[in-house]
Amino acid sequence: MISKAASNFWARPTESHHQQLGYLDISQSSTCLLLLMLMPTFLSPADHLAAGAHVRVADFDSNTLDRTMKPLDVNLPPTLPMNFGTDNSTLVRAQIGSTAHLPCVVHNIGEGVVTWIRRQKDHHLLTVGLTTWASDERFQARHFQHSEDWTLQVKFVQPKDAGLYECQVSVHPPSSIFLFLEVVGELNIKDIINTLVLLKLLSAI
Image (cartoon, rainbow, N blue to C red; front, side):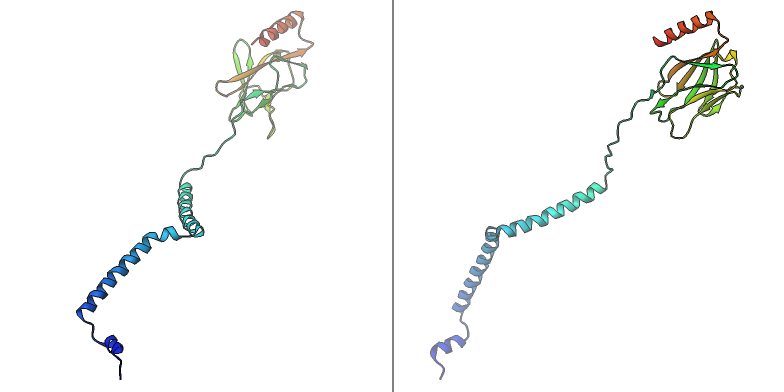
């Protein structure tokens, strides 16, 4: 025989039972909602760190992608100014018939071009770079690759070659040094005095 408690258990639920079950459903829903709201409070420090790590990784990835879309700032070394390694007012002596070499050492030339000019009453353009512009082919610029020396070579020196020469570099503004070619044996005392006075004036520039 089924007991009374068992029969009540298997009996069809009454309206009061539905009301009680409904109350229980509402209570259980409220309890679940409260647990969800309080869940961050019960997270362990390790859980917080893990959650934060995911966020930071996402931010890092987005920043990394953003950085790749922008041009990189390249710190270029400062450009060194051009300067001459040959002293201004240099005196070069050469004998008649020999080959004279007028040196012009240029540091940090960059994109500049070396030009040799004969300074007389009228300026005579001799060379531009390694190209000879003068009609006299005895004048030639000598320069070796990776060298800073731009020497003016004068073959078969003649007395008329004596005088003032300018080594000019086409920077902004153009910069120059002056050299004096002395032909040995052909200058008289007057020419020597004029040469010394000219060199004195050039050294004051």
